[in-house]
Amino acid sequence: MWCISLWMLMVASLSKACEPTVTTVSGSHAPSKYCSGDMIFQEDFEELDLEKWQHENTLSGGGNWEFQYYSNNRTNSFVHDGLLFIRPSLTADHYGDWFISAGRLNVDGGAPADRCTNSRWFGCERIGTANHILNPIKSARLRSISSFSFRYGRIEVRAKMPAGDWLWPAVWLMPTYDAYGTWPASGEIDLVESRGNRHMYLDGVHIGTQEAGSKLHYGPYPELNGWDKTHWIRRNTNGYDRAFHRYEMEWTPDYMKFTLDDEELGTITPDEGGFWKIGEFGKTPNVDNPWKYATKMAPFDQKFYIILNLAVGGINGYFPDGITNPDPKPWFNYSPAAATDFWKHKSRWLPTWNLDVNDGQDASLQVDYVRVWAL
Image 1 (cartoon, helix red, strand yellow):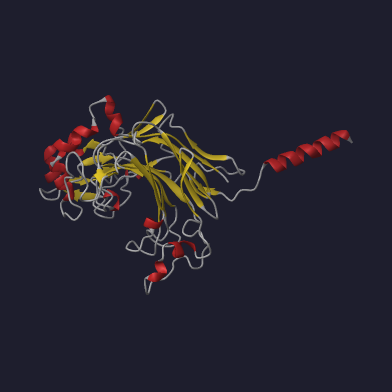
Image 2: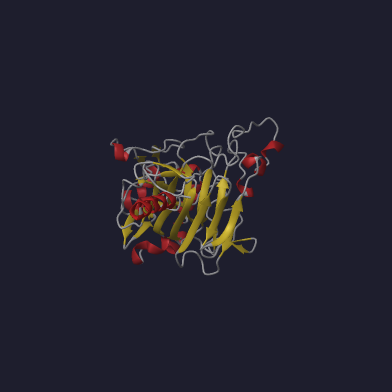
């Protein structure tokens, strides 16, 4: 009798230990079995695991006409001492100065691993001219689209932001499937974004390396995007480029909570009106709600994958016109030749990147780990 009772107690204990979870996962590196509280994705960057991280290979400029292009090259993405480095470099260093304004660049290598990953915005092939140069910067964007995506859970990324004028690092998540339509109807989750300028001000407020923030993008179409109502920032006078910090999100069927070093940045808790109500989209006539038959968390009730990247510049306003910087911003966001204007002034911004010091680590987005837990 004692043995039977002990066996029953052990069975009950084991069954109780695996609490049900609201988290769902998919991908080649997603666990088949897991319980609430389990770590379901872990990357400590002891190596650059290309089964986990697919490189983007495109000239598309991130949809913002940014000045970099992305490729799979160890100049721009590598692992050293347990850290992932995403490092910018000059296209001219690879192809020569003449190539920027006169070359033809086709990034579709033909083999499965070398395919162009985004053809929009002339993303697979471009021809440089004197007025419209090729992307002057090379960088990297890594994503877990094939290996891991999840819906609901807790994600933590420990990272150090880069320093250098006009650098734009980001750790973010995009929907694995556009369940509600194209961007931003299916959502975007920005875990952290920052700017690399160490001395940049807007209306007297430092918006460079001393600022980091999280935000959500959502809306029925690009011109109707509610990000400004779900945007949280924190300033650190020491700069987020000087040390590693932990960027976290807890994501449940009821709320999304963003924290930085365990201190809350912001929480959004939709009621039955969901993100349609939060975005106040009903004030715009003749617009349909893409989430009207979904849950209150839509579009953030679907699986998302993880992205790590370092962009440069762009014309979407992330680097506003009218900012104060030791060397003025070399392009205007309305310029039809923004990349050309940026490149013409490389003598101003390139020294701030310190690429010739310590293998350019200052200008690199450095990621220590990425971890995801089930809820």
